[in-house]
Image 1 (cartoon, rainbow, N blue to C red):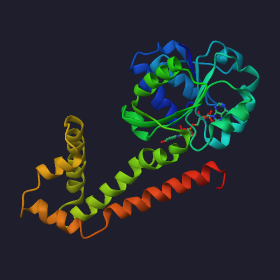
Image 2: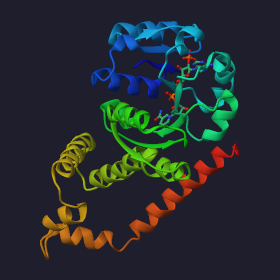
Image 3: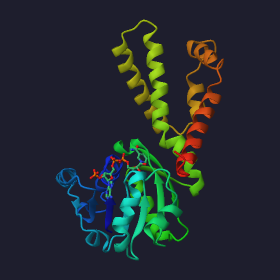
Image 4: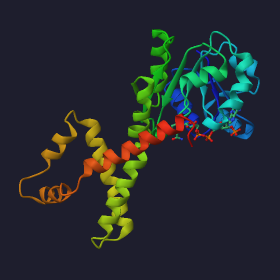
Length: 270
Ligand SMILES: NC(=O)c1ccc[n+]([C@@H]2O[C@H](COP(=O)([O-])OP(=O)(O)OC[C@H]3O[C@@H](n4cnc5c(N)ncnc54)[C@H](OP(=O)(O)O)[C@@H]3O)[C@@H](O)[C@H]2O)c1
């Protein structure tokens, strides 16, 4: 299998690092290119053994999967660059937020299979939750190969294209929402009178430990909570205070705002 990355920025780096580390594809079969930053490509070659090239014909010849990893506003320029060299073997995987498959198809001037993925920043630690949507002409074998590639940097959830807006809100932006909640927890903990640096360190470890509990347990989050809540105890008192606020409603507003913005951006309504 030969894989090409057009755009070798932060997100692409997380993705091809995961693919190389999972040994699905030998690093020499992964080819990177970018606009002009050759130093960056050289450093990736040194770090992982992946190749790079600026010759579009060489890049796309025999390429099975072509990742489109530029910023959305750079895509039209990218499409001009690669359009003349696309061949029947090339299947495209866009990581660009907001650009519909129909638009990518139109700009590339091809009817080749196209998938869209919505990863999140946890790809850097191999734990992205990635939504994926395929064009109708993506065959089952190719779909399976793409699932394997995505599993190399986390987990994958296949959805129809419209639902990528919800995925963008829930898991694409999700790490930032959780960081925000953790920030408030640190502030509240510090206000109890303890040293801020110590509270922050303790809460980092609290989050890591709680994540590992979730990872290693088959129990629902509700059950995990119930298991550590004794009637009349301190946890119960804190939870009672939390339920005086509409926390679910707050997150409903948060996710709705993110979904609405995703829809606006995909309509080029910036
Ligand atoms: N970061 C995230 O958490 C995240 C999450 C989900 C989706 N995404 C999506 O991932 C995409 C990339 O984001 P990023 O943060 O990785 O961006 P980035 O670090 O700015 O990287 C952009 C890359 O695109 C390259 N590029 C621009 N024009 C090009 C062209 N005509 N031909 C080839 N390469 C070109 C740049 O090359 P030079 O360096 O040479 O200019 C650079 O390697 C975005 O579309 C974003 O929506 C990101």
